[in-house]
Length: 182
Image (cartoon, rainbow, N blue to C red):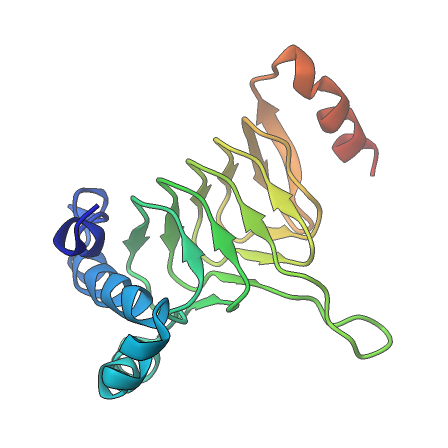
């Protein structure tokens, strides 16, 4: 993939979001720069500008070094917080005031970050925290607090989030039953 294709890989996903169309190429260029140590030093001012514009002007905390698959759509984006160790799959949608990050444990230490699968649609005002995995093709309802791993092909909602519907595949039955039991 050439640099132009890399920078604009999220363009179609953000066709209904002007803010997404502005932020995602800005993020992808910063992400490309950050992956190369020499470029990091050469384009240090750009990285600082990126952080200033996204964090302070647009209210989106999206570090340039997180792993994000192609096709990420941002709707509104305001108040979006992504922990630096977060991993997000392909063709995901994130809406405003969503937090994806770590949990502070009782002893003061921190947990690992969530891993978000492909084709995940996250509703506004959602919180996804802890060392969890969100499976592929999951829809997370608005205002949900997700603190347990979610199997693929489910719709979850609530605080704490629970499965409200699913399209089960035979190999996923055990994961769904374990989630429902906990």
